[in-house]
Length: 219
Image (cartoon, rainbow, N blue to C red; front, top):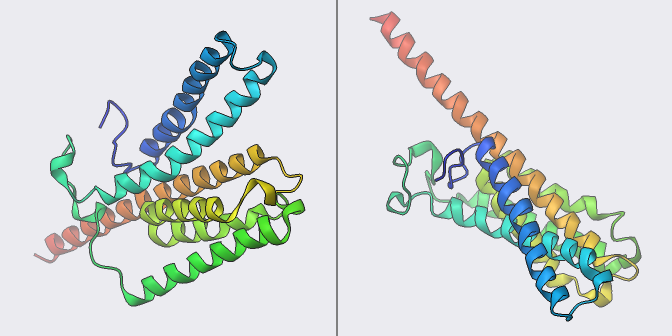
C-alpha cells in the first residue's frame, strides 16, 4: 500500500494508479533505459530505437497487467502480507466456487480458445479486424464477478492468445499491434472490474445502513 494506491486494487482509483504507473510509465522508462544502453554500446541501430522501445513497453506492460492483478486478488485473504487495515469480508473470497460458476468459467475458457484460434489461426490475415471478439469473455467476467473476474479473464485471454499464436501464423499482421490489442483488453477489463466491485461494495454498505436505520426506527 502506498500513499494513494492500495496494492490490493480495491477501488477504481487504485486500478487507475496501477495501470498508469506500473503498466504504462514504468515499462516505458525501463524500455528507454534498456534500448539506450544497447544503442550507446552499438548493439542496436539508432533507427530501431523507438520501435523497440514501443515493443518492449507494450510487451512488459501486458505481462504486468495480466499477472499482478491476479496475484493481488489471490493474496487478499492473507492480512499478514499487507500493511493496511485487515481485509473486510466483502473484499475477499466469501465462498468456494459453485458448480454453475465452474461451468461458466469453463465455457468462457473454451470460448476464448475458439475466438483466439479463429482470429489468429483460421483468419490470420484479418486478425485485427476480429480481435474485438477477445473483449467478450473479459467483459463478461468483469461484469459478473468484478475485479476478481476481470483479473482472471484478462490473464486467461492473454495466456490463451500467447499459447495459440505463433509469429508465423500472423500473416501480414503487425505483432506489435497484437500486443497492443492484448494490453487494451487488459486495461478495459480491469477498469470495468474495479468499477463493478466498487459499486457492489457501495450498494452493500448502503443496504446495511438502511437496514440499521429501519431497525432503529422500529424500536
